[in-house]
Image 1: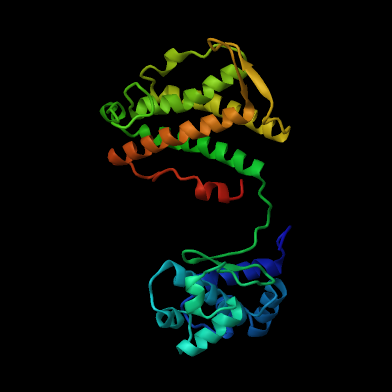
Image 2: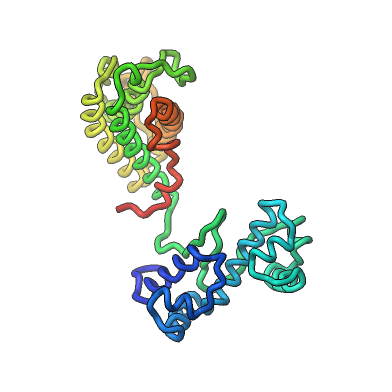
Length: 307
């Protein structure tokens, strides 16, 4: 399923969505076909051609994979797990499970292995309750690093916009747990998050960084500076990654004394300290009644294809 999506692959993707939404409903192939406005013949042909197995076989396998996950993630009885997987008896479930995983459920539960059953179409149950299609693109370590930096810049921008809804008293309320020696507030942390990128941009360009801009910085200034410093920092990161220069060094001559850094070390430094500061901001925003951003977790961000 790599490469450009075909009409059959689009239809198969729609089938997987219907299956995921109604995994516990005992739909037969005809009902799946009806939901997708297809004949039973055409649905079987399309699913079989893309996934390498007919719809009902795929569904039974997914339910067995979910059952394996339930065995190791809950203390539910084997009979309860069997019933949820659509089996009418302990014996029938045990036979099917042994064929798929090589051991009966009780023994497998004591010595579990992968919950995935080999399948030609590589569609599998994805805990805690979803399905996963094979990826249409290969994500490299370099792609991931770039996406993490992109996420960082995006999240800081979102935090600034949420902070703009707060009164000054909330922006300047001291946060008890801090990453620096100075008193930390939403305002000061956002200013340091932007300033961290600005500081490294200055180091790369061998120019001074103006620390005074971070003194009780306005939201307007935060927006303006992020619009300048964010893209500049991301450009430097992308260039280092694309040119495979993460191990290359540069000299920050403005340090006392001058220091030598690598591009990879700089990126790791920014993401490490930024993650802590972002978490403090996210929790402080939530305490101020602005919980839209949650914890700012990048998990879903890096899993989505860039626009």
